[in-house]
Structures are given as C-alpha cells and as structure tokens.
Length: 293
Image (cartoon, rainbow, N blue to C red; front, side, top):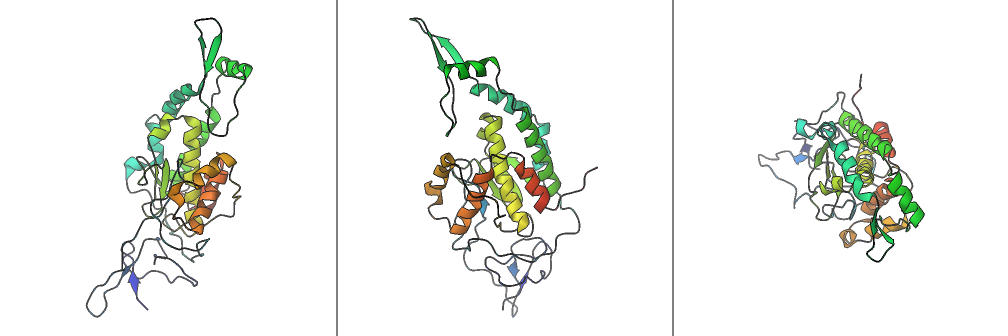
C-alpha cells in the first residue's frame, strides 16, 4: 500500500478508518496528500485533481465533475485541530464585507423591487414591477401597498451579518468574485476554505444575496460534518424537498454529469436555502468556531 504525507502538516497523517472512498486526504487538516518518495524516487497521483466546488445552477454550481462518488461521502474519522485555524488572507475576512458597506449596498439595491406607478397618456395608470420565479402576480391593491410601505428586509440583513460573523469564527474566507464555474452565483471551495459569491448578486438585493450566502453556508456545514472545512462534504440529513421553482436549477445542463452524491448535496442546499437563519445554526453546530468574547 502506498504511503502518503501531508504537505501542510509536514508528516504522516492520522490513520483513516475504513471504508474509505475518494482522494487521499490528511486526517488532521483535510488537505490532499502527496505520495512519499519510494526507493529514492518520488511519484505522484495519476491524472489531475479537480477541486470540488459546490453550489447550484443559476444560484450556484459545480466546478467540475469528480467522477463516480457514493450518494453520501463516507464518514472519515479525524481529529479536529486543537487550535482555531484563522483565514490566511485578512482581506477575505467575511466581516470585511460588512465593514466595506455591504449592508448599505444591499439596502440600496432593494429599491429596484419597489413597484412604480406610471400615468398613461390616454388616462389611467400602469404598474411596473419585478417578480422572482415562483412568486404570484400581484393585484393593484397589493402593488399600491408595496409602493406605500416598501419591505425593509432589515431582519434578513441582520441574518446576513450574523452568518458572516459565524463564518469568520469558523475560519472561512468569503470573496466577492466570479465563481470558477460559468453561470454560477456562488460556490464553496472546500480545498481553499473559500466561499465565493458573484458581485452581481449584491446588485439583486437583500433577498437574493441572503439565499445565495445561506445556500453556500449549508455546503460549508456539509464539509464540517465530514471532518472539517477542507473535507469533502456529505449530506446533513436535512429535508431534500426542493420547491418547484428551484427544481428547474437542478435540471440545468450544468448537472448533466453530476453524480447522485453531488445532486444530493445540492438538493439539500436548495431545499433549505430560504431558511435564512439556518446557515449560521448549521455552521455553529458542525464547524469548529473560535470562542468570542
């Protein structure tokens, strides 16, 4: 049997209990392992290694298919790090987004969802408004009510701030950047401990940003449940009943080559992404977070 070493821990990894399926990873930090030199010659793994990035079509997407994997990644016995492992890049601290004015930008972007009433040349009024997929058409009275009293979404923005704080305590990096998968709004790159969200999502306002962030935070918790932030995710046992309007994303061609296991991870995230406070709860429950105060 080949022997491996961890390039991060600089030594032989902890033994992983069988059964084990997938790429060899360190039992301490979750990094991919490299073969130890044998008979005076170093040798490596055949083929390239693809980083698994989890998300969904339109809201978030898979980076590259990783081949056939089990429906649920096998449980790997690991020893959690005894100390908090902070994000290596201070500029990618999740709370740096709040400090940079994210919540104010979201509040400004919410204005686009307020209906507008325009008088017609021949008399009468027409209403112009935007509607998300799955939302019913609004009556004149409902549209006028939204004009008179626009929704504040303050509770959702507070939930966003709380989730970003928890992600920072867990050592996750968050970056407003184009995901590696074209067409994705967000992705969780467990190998880099980095959650990426497309900058255009901010322009869609509080509701859309909260759902994308929450979706990816569920994937973060899936990694932690498998052993740590850098671990290959596994399902958490949450509901996988995806709303009808979101099932369309799972039928996107982006998922044509996805395994049943990858689709199960996505179904779990899609089914629960609208529970805005759930992401923070799951990260607190499954990830090692730094004590505050």
